Image 1: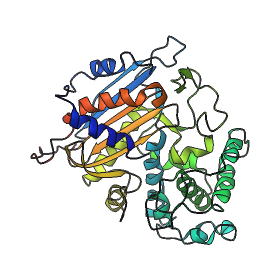
Image 2: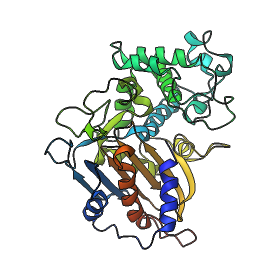
Image 3: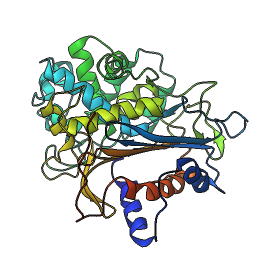
Length: 379
């Protein structure tokens, strides 16, 4: 999910009065959570190449007394798609993969079984939601089988995408934006075939380790950590599609990490927008952060000229598996950004809580559209 929350926040900000200063994030967070059933939430601000401020509040579990801490891990949902893109970009830079290679050449073992419309789909189209694929496998009962599947995760992904590539496209491939989790699972399978490594190992090697993201991992959180919630209760067992997503969905948005580690990735994206990124080449950052033709997104950032009346460009994304909600908005020309997360989703008003926090800190991140920009400092 790239734009839905941001669009709602933009309308709300246009209608509201003066916003609070971001000096006391703890107060903003507590006030926004008051009277809501959201167990815990967190917010982190970035400026000039570093973490400026952060706050967390609430309980790890709604049925417990342990309070959430700054080092706790959170599920970041589909905002992790951008990390999958960065992983693939590093492989492209080394010549292991190519952005324009056709799918029939990247996964030749599936070429005969896949629908002809997909055979020329490129890696670039898969990661920009322009491959024409449905959001998920349309056979929900088939998806449910992956929650109890004991095969290695790469084998599960290959079986899933073999079925997905037999389904008719949502739109003609290469013609329009059509948000798809499946496209990211296919890209992961391509990377797995090319390297002989699992996605889970690749994301650690190519993204987490270079950026010092020690808490980064795939799949759901575990006992003793902050847990996601649905219907007012902690979701301890994810057993079917209504509960969340299966472990093999990690490339499409099933990663967890601390707020600090999530910030390390996004600080690098901000640095990349200023030409001083650590992880990728300048060309790769530009590709990720530039809208594709006829699309609202790059790879996989939503790219907006302005955000809720604030000067852009802005890079935005949100994600949820139904048990968590995560939101990121970056302003590369300002060198600023915000991360927001809750261990619940819209059914427990997490969207309203995070929107409230977002609206109060947004004016601190970028001047009003049309105003002069302050000079950006760099580390």
